[in-house]
Amino acid sequence: MRIAEEQMPYGNIGVAFTYNEPLISYEYILDTAKLLKPRGLRTILVSNGMASVETVGELFDYVDAMNIDLKGFTDSYYQDLLKGNRQMVMDFITEAVKHCHVELTTLIIHGENDTEEEIRALSQWIADLKDTAGNQIGQNIPLHLSRFFPRFHMKDRDATPVDLVYHFKTVAEEYLNFVYTGNC
View 1 (spheres, helix red, strand yellow):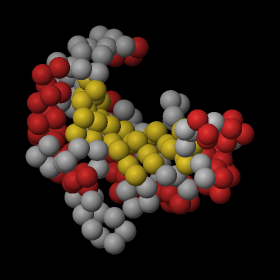
View 2: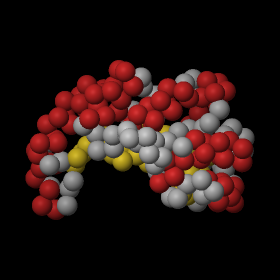
View 3: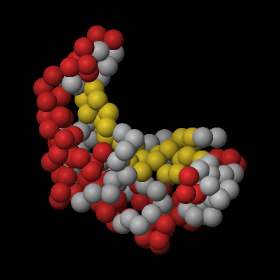
């Protein structure tokens, strides 16, 4: 925290928790965020959103911005490939947008989560998200569609075709105002 404060004159706005999944140590993030806020520093979280809102709910009062991975939009993809729970991530996102700036990221993996129907359903769901007053705000939530490259446990896969990522950007823009491509 001392370093973050010292760097404020040079444009530092806060502390970002990223790379390793930060929610596994949400108590540390909560304690740190409580110290940062009164000092005028912001807290940013980059997460897979795989956490119960009831468990980490107090974080929402202290985190200023989140980038959350919405890795796909089928239960089978989340359960079979990721060993996760899509509904838990959706619930986390639904709550997060009520408290802070949220951006979402979907890594497009060829042959896994790369159908037009899935991207359309994902984008429609995002567009329908609401703030605490019940106002529809989802159409203004940025979505980052990223191209997959084969590495580590998935090195036997093909890289996602660039034209497919750009096509999905067009599909998502039917519902969302801010769609960006990455790794293209």
